[in-house]
Image (tube, rainbow, N blue to C red):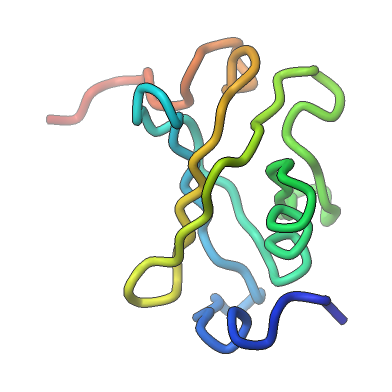
Length: 112
């Protein structure tokens, strides 16, 4: 059971696995850095610690961005979108965000 505020929890629209998408945006540049997944507990941890915490769908465990790499995301603000199915995390990045070493995960092929 999560300690997430019941008011916040009631507004979330989770997928079949109990997750919501979490879009991470750089607080200074406003660039989109990455997308991760959060359940109620990951969101609670993010809100209470100020460290971006996600649910790893592949490892089936919680992970704090930068826990092993040192490339942390210090959370400044968290917003819920109008549908309740996505959160926007605004953060200060210390080091590259993408596992490839890039500043953002969105440097691959431009589609349009």
